[in-house]
Amino acid sequence: MKAGLADRQSEVSFYSFSIGMSIEATNIQDKETIIRDDRDLSSSIDNIDLELSILNVYDCCSKDNWDGYGAKPITPASWRGILKLIKGLPNSYPKPEATASPRGLMVIEWHRRKGHILSITIENESKLSYNVLFGADEAYGIVAFDYNLPDAILEHLRRLFKN
Image (cartoon, rainbow, N blue to C red; front, side, top):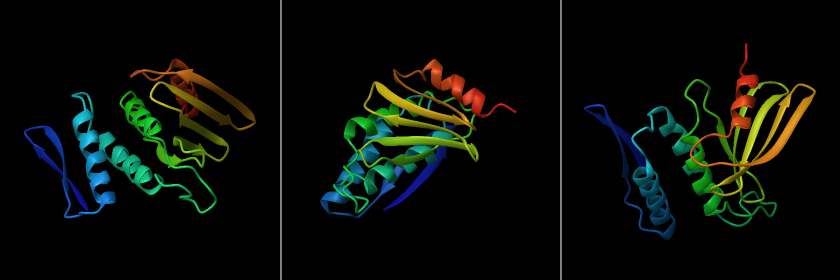
């Protein structure tokens, strides 16, 4: 599968070119269609790489035992939730890294320097949990979210990238 971007008159489009016929290829094409169709007008080109990274993680970790140690497959609710969450990320901070947890949940993380990390685990489309380390200080919690990033997460991002 190849993915490409086309910029026509300031409109960003996502195109997928695939000759795959397998069930896995069809599933990937369906997920690409969801990303493309779900993109709202405020979505920026900066999020396309992050969205593709999330799609890659989902594809790699959507089967039982994806890590060889009994990991659960990523849940569709967690995948949809992370796509919803990243639409609310401010452009003033670096983009996070997308990963998966062995519990079957999507995770995004920001690493500032050793011992300074913000990790968000997407439970479903309206609930997330977070852990943050600022050296010896640690904070964690569970919060509800909609299309706006929760205030607690924004405050932790500000603190993480301060100075």
